[in-house]
Amino acid sequence: MQRLLLTAALVSAAALALDHLQVLDARIAELEQVPRVEVEHTREFARRLDNLRRLLEEARVTFESDDRADALAAKLVIVSKALERERCAIAAQDERLADWEEHWGDRQRKSLEGKLDALSADLGRRQRDLDELRALASRTSEQGEERLLALSQQVQPLLAEPDTQGLWHEVVGPVAQLSGDTTVGSGVLLESQRRTNGEGYVTHVLTSWHVVRDIYGSLERIESPVPVRLYEPDGSTTDETAHMVAYDIGLDIALLEMDFDRQAPHGARLASHDELRRVDTFDAVYAVGCPLGNDPIPTSGEVASTTHVVDGVRYWMISAPTYIGNSGGGIFDARTRKLVGIFSKIYTHGSARSTIVPHMGLATPLPVIYEWLDRTGHASLFNSHDAPRTAAASR
Image (tube, rainbow, N blue to C red):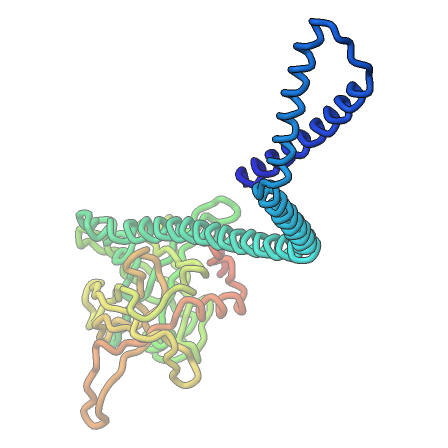
């Protein structure tokens, strides 16, 4: 491009020089019409004028005959055409750019904006997913800590030294022996409750109906007192009596009341409704009774079933070893040491000479007993808490 501009400049300079020569030639012609003055100082001027005329003529001949002027002119034409083509190309390019900007530029911009919106929405979803994961991790961590705490609370008693005295007081001490002339069974003392008038205490006993029936021998003696033997940790005993308050032959359950108004030294705590709903297979239990007329004996086992039905009555089957005399005794939760059922019967095998199956005992569960106490007007003996409410004496 620089060479083209230089050539154009040279051509322009040559044309200007020709114009000057023509003007100078015309001026010389005008001077020749002026009369000559034959003085000495004009001779030199004439001589110089002749020389100038000769140089002008040579210059004219040179410019008129020199092919370089034609070449420069031709190049100037070529340069002019090239410049025109470039101008047209630039104009076309400008038009294409304007068209792209008008049509494709806006479309491309909208496409980019759409992609950015999609990316922003995806980022928002990922952020929400991350927040949910964080919340889930937090909840999982809290639940894990709660489970670990619960497990620690369950394991801690197992790791600690066994509280045999406390265990005896809560599980063995409440079990009493009920006996007659030819039979023996068990009963469970509940915690003594102060009478509403504030004068003394009332203590109830839960047992099986067939235990009391066998002691009476016949229903005609139902008003007779039932012998009850209480036990102390040192092996000492106290013989007392109790009287019948309520019974149900179908459920094989009976409620007695002790014939004294002092506070009993031992009494079973009743499991709450919530605790009873959580009892399930494999839960550890203690079965405590007086088999064969012995002092209360605790045996350990598990809940084998909570849905066992015999003659239309629901029982819990337990695997803790039991025997004749355990009837009316208590089934205690091994973890809370609270009463969850009353032992009722045991499986036997064979008809001619039946064999007792000691690990297949059946207990009347406390929820069934609660329903029965409610129907018989003794709901005050239990509630949804760990301890029963204060009840009035009933004779």
